[in-house]
View 1 (cartoon, rainbow, N blue to C red):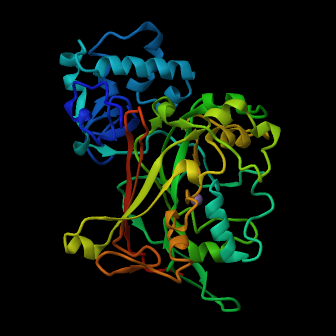
View 2 (cartoon, rainbow, N blue to C red; view 1 turned 135 degrees about the horizontal axis):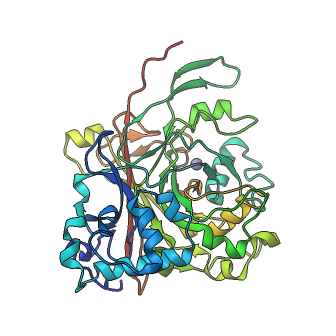
View 3 (cartoon, rainbow, N blue to C red; view 1 turned 30 degrees about the vertical axis):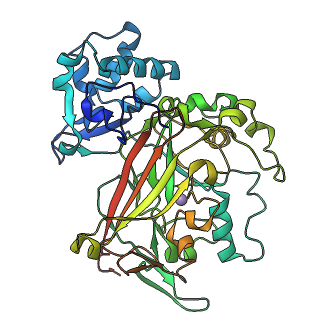
Length: 437
Ligand code: MN
């Protein structure tokens, strides 16, 4: 049984399967008017509404120790807020709960600070300096590895090194924006000449994004025992991938134009504090090597995992034309998919003295579960395009087609905890432009 929410005077937050009960309170940035003229504000989602944090300070008294935090948020300085100590993040969350709980004495004052989510345009939740993408699902790495190296699918480093690459922050985009099919160099087969054309193997990757809170100075490290204090929160992440461009360009330096045309994220950062009830133990399989000392920690073993359920829906143009509902065609569990924990990814990233800053984003890598039907990409689900999946209306999909709307959702649900959700990361594919030589 789910625990019942403590309840809020914002009644929509008390609906049974609401993503944003008072126990969640994720942060996002929004504009009241679309276009460049609308000013950006920071808010927290509560039910179907947003509490506008640029309005709150003028309406209610705040505790003295939160003056800096409230000031930063009211000025739109999300990264500044994220860089504060995690003790302040906990205290701010308690204060927000006291403002929004059922029976709060602040209810009347705060009415004017509420905005309907349906009335605003959501932006990226903070300024993202840097974006790294990991490869943390051993199931994904093995299945994709098999396609390339059938006899030796998993590289020798996989069980020792949290493998990743540096992505591109400039093409990170929020949920909702249409994504243009990219053009690039592809090759029809071994020994054939390459062509410059629209990708024919456009794919999604079901991932979670990890936001860094407090950073570290260059040449300093983040010890694994302290890594959680640098973990601000999470969102959904779709690492759009052009498999044909990727396959031709990736040797020997790895992903480039097959990846950096767009990566989309859900607009709300679910905080580490909100994820706390969903923590689980993390264990390495006894037959696998234990991590090296700098990635090994007692607290990480007891508490390093997080139970998050993820799923992907598709809505094709034909489904829209015929008024059919979106179809959920794959799902997975973060704790089943991930070989490394959030703390290990953060500690590893900074282990060479690489400086992380507040607002940096780390993708987990495609979160494919241990069963083939729980794969987090079409590349895996269609076996490299050889076995298309069949949608309920009979349409086939090996890869993503123009007009397809891909929607990722996630939620945490456990015994004796109040269910919380991530909202969604949902984008539609628009056709490629005409190639220009
Ligand atoms: Mn990826």
